[in-house]
Length: 135
Ligand SMILES: [Zn+2]
Image (cartoon, rainbow, N blue to C red; front, top):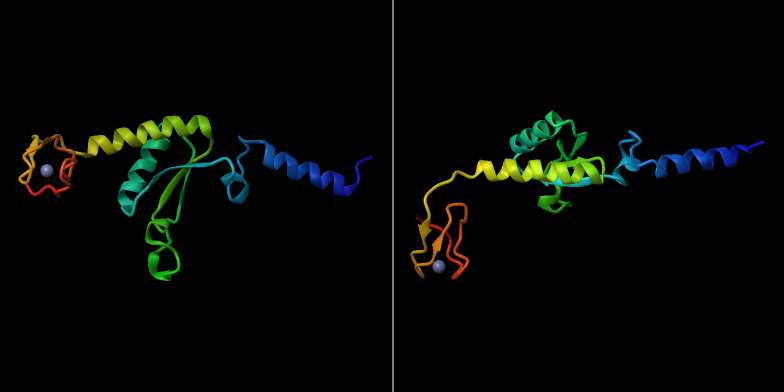
């Protein structure tokens, strides 16, 4: 007959060993991966909608956290989107990348005013001399 301690240990083990268990919170985080973080809450909401439309379970962290505490580095206060496990991660990352690249308008190429290097529209600084894009 199982002792109470043994039973409790078994339950704990199951929680930690079942990667697909719908256990959010501290245990769930063990199997989760961050796919996106931005200080732009609207964009985070948009990405999350895209992921959920594709049937991916995800959670948002730091949604209501602000940098006001002063004790946390600013970029760690950004809202983050986490997905449940490895198989979701690959798919989620692809969706995020597509969403981000489609957000960049496809404009004309530009020419660095300092060194004359030509760049695709999505680059905002010159890889050759480091100038910030001004044209
Ligand atoms: Zn340049």
